[in-house]
Length: 115
Length: 110
Image (cartoon, rainbow over all chains, first blue to last red; front, side):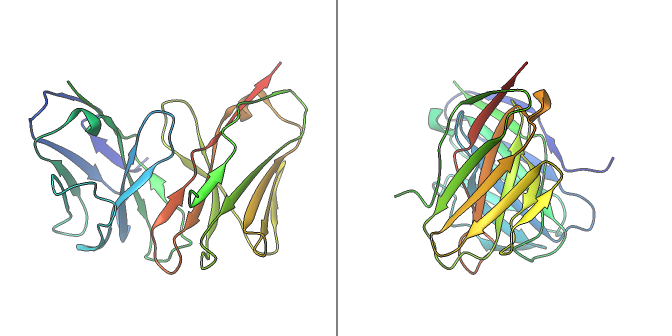
C-alpha cells in the first residue's frame, strides 16, 4: 500500500554530525507534519507544511533543526551538529487536506541515536 | 499544567473487562479531539475522532465534555489485541498543531 514512508529507519550519528531524515507522504496529501517522540512520551510537534509552505515551525527545538518540502511532496528534516538529547524517534505524518480535523497518517519513524 | 494530561497507567485488566480512560486539556479554544492508538515500537494510528455529541465505534465509545475540558474513551469487552498505548490528542486552538498526551498504557491479560 502507498502509505507514508520514512528513511532511514535507523540512524546512528556521532555527536556533532549532521543528519538528514526523509519523509515520503501519501501521494496527494496536502499537509505534512514532523514530530519528535522520546521514549515513554507522546509525540511532540516540530513543524507543519501545507504543500510547500512551512506554516508552523514553532516546535523546532533549536536553530540546528531545519525542515523543507520544496515541491510540496517529499520532506526532509535536517539536524545539524547533533547532540545526545536529539536521540528520539522522528515521526512524519500526512493528511489529505489542511483541515484540522483530518486524520493524520504516520510513517514508521526514524530512530535516531546520537552517541 | 500540561496542555493535555492523561493518567499514564499502566492499566492491567482481564479479557472481557470494561476500561475507561480520561484526558483533560487546557486550551478552551480547542476544536478537534482524537484518540490514537500506538503499539510498542510502532507509529500512532487513529482510533477515533471525538465529536461533541459523543460517538461509538463497536466496543469503543468516546465522549467530550467541553465545560470540564475532558474527553474519555471507554473500551468494552476488552480483547488481548487491545493492549497498546492510547494517546489523547487535541488541536491547539485555531490552528492545525496537535498536542499529544503522554499516553495511557493498557495491558489486557488472558
